[in-house]
Length: 373
Image (cartoon, rainbow, N blue to C red; front, side):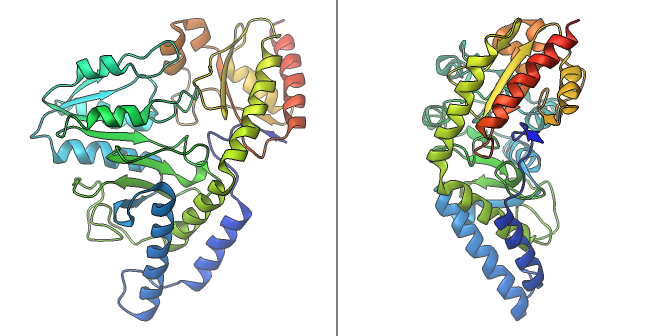
C-alpha cells in the first residue's frame, strides 16, 4: 500500500496508541470527581495541558479540548460572533478555507452577519492592503486559515495578527489544522486557533481550540464546567493525554522532517511536469506536504479509483468537501474551471519513502494514459 492522503488523516503513532491504552486502563476516575481517582485524572490532564501549552507558546488556561478541528472552528466562530454581536456583525475570511469555516459563516449570515472575502495575490496569499481596506468599525472577526488544506498555501498569519492588533474590537481566528506538526507558527498575535490530533499521528476524536485569556465565548455545548466553562462534558482523559504525546513526538524532529518532505515534493514536481496536460496548482508559497495538481481530460474520482486499484491512495478535494463540485480553492487560485474540476491532492509525510514516490509516478502515468483513451 502507498498512502498519499496524510492531509485527510494520519496513521496513529504506536507510542501515542500505547499512551491512550495505558491511560484508559489506569486513570479510570472522572476528572471532575472529588475522590482520589478523580484527582489523579485531573492532574494528568493538567500535565498534558502544560505540555501542549509549552510547545505552542500559550497558557494552559487558554486550551479548550474539543472533538476535533471542526468543533473547534464552530466554537470559535459562533462563540465569538454570538457573544460580541453588540460590537458589530461584519466578518472577513478568504476563498481558501475549510468547510468547517464556511459552514458556521453561512449559518451566521442567516442571523444577519455580513461576510467579506479578502483578495489574495497570484500565489493565494492574503493581500494585506485589501484586508486593511475591508476592516471596519463593526468588524468583529477575521478568520483565515494558516495553511489551505487542498493546495497548501501558507498564509501570512503573523503579519495579519500584527495588523489586527490595531483593531482591538476585532478578533483573529486561524485554523491551524494543516500546519501543526509540520511547521512552527507564532501565536502571539492570534486570539483563537484550532487544530485536530489526527492530522499529526494522534487519535481521531480529540482536538483543541486555543482561546486567549480575557476573551469570552458563547459555548456550543452547555451543561457545566469540564476542563473549561466553554465546553461541557466529561473530559476524555486518555484522548487528551494522547494528544499531548502526539504533539510532543511530532515536534521532536520538525525541521528535519520538513526538509525531507520538501525533497520528496521536489522529486514529484520534476516528474509531473513531464506528463501531458498535467498542471501543478501548488506553488512555492505552499507547504511541501501538500501537492495539488490538475489532470485535464480525466475525472478526479475516476483517477482516484484507478490508483486505488493499484493500492495507492490520494484525495480529490478535502475529505470533508461536498462531492461533485469544482474545487473552490483551485478555481480561486487559477481562475480556470477545467483545472478546478480536474484537481487531485497528493499529501506527503516523513513516513513517505522515495521508493513510494517512484512507484506512484509510474502508476500515475499508466493510469492517465489508460483513462485518456
